[in-house]
Amino acid sequence: FLDRVYELLRATGEQEKLGKGHSGYAATHGSMDIAITKNVSRIMKETLTYFFSSMDTETYRSALRSVSKFMEEETLPFAVKDASLLCQAVCMTRFDLKDSSADASPGLDALVPILTEDLEHRSTKSAIYRLRCLAGAVRYAGSSVLKHRDSIVAAITYALSQPDDKVLFKTGCKLLRHTLSSQCEEYPIAQSSHPMKSGTNFVPGACAELKHDGVHWCVPSGKSIDFTVDLVGRFCLKRLRSLGDTTGDNNIQRWRQSLRVLRYTLRGCLGILLDDSADTILSQEGELCPKEKATASLIKSSSPESQKILGDL
Image 1: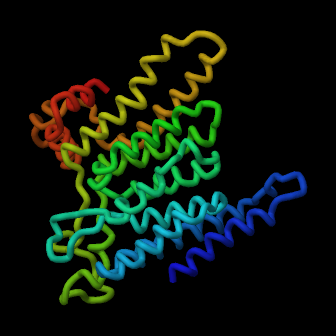
Image 2: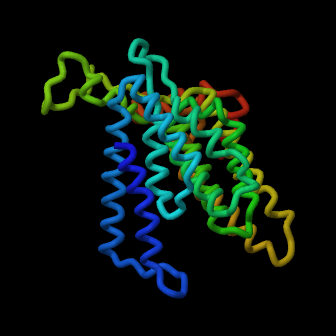
Image 3: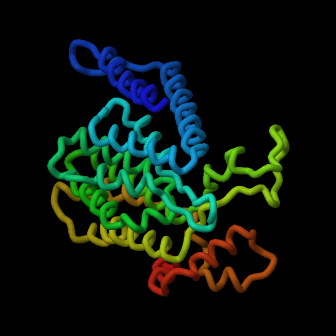
C-alpha cells in the first residue's frame, strides 16, 4: 500500500510538470481543478490517518522504516502537500496498548533528524520541501515535540532568517504556527478511535457516547505551554520590539514580515489567549464555559514567567 502512495506522490510531480507551458510557468488552474485537488488531499489525509492508526506496534515499525527511507532518499517539491500529510499521519501521537496513559510519537523521533539535517546547505526547493513536511509531522505529535525543541527551533530560525525568499519565509511561519498549535491545543488520538482498538463491546454502526467512548485525547501540559511562550517570545515579540530600531528603505518590508509572523503566531496559539488573567477566570463562578476554566487551569500549570507573558498579551 505504501508503495502505491509513493507512486501517487511521484505522479503528482510529473503531472504538474506536464501542465507547464513552454515559458516554464504552470498553466492556470480553474476552480474545478482546485476542488478536485482539495478533495483528493482530504481523502489522502483520512486514508493515511486510518491506515497508520489501525496498525499494531510491529507493523507500524515496519511502515515507519519505509516512510523514513522514502523521505530521506526522495524530494518531490510538486507533491509537498501530500508528502506533508504522509508525515502528519505517521507522526500522530500513539500510545502503548498496555499503558494508554503514556503517549509518544515514534514517527516524529525518526523523521525530525531526517527533515532538519543540513538545511543551510540544501537548495531552496529542497529546504522548503523538508520544512513543509516537518510542519505536517509536528501538527499532531503532542508532547513528543518537546524532545526535539532544539532542532525545530533551529529550523524555524533558519526559515525566518531568509527575508529575501518569500516562499521560504512563509514556510517558516507555517512551521511556527503548527508547532504552536500542537503544544497548546487538545485533539483526539486517532489510534484510540479505531474500531479495532475499541474492545470487545464495539458494535459497528452504533451511535457515539459522550461518556466511556474510549477515545484518548492529547492534552497540553505546563511544559508545553512554557515551550509555546518561548516560541512566541523568541520569534514574534522579539521581532515586534525591534521594529522601532529599523530605519531606511527596508522598514516597510520589515513591518510586513513582522505582521505576517504575528498573524501566524496568533493562529497557532489563539486557544490559550484569554481576556482576563487565569486567576481572575478561576475566581469566577457560573459565568464562564468549562473550556475557559480548563484553559486557565492549564496556564496556571506553567511557570510564573509564562503566566506573566500570557497575561500581558
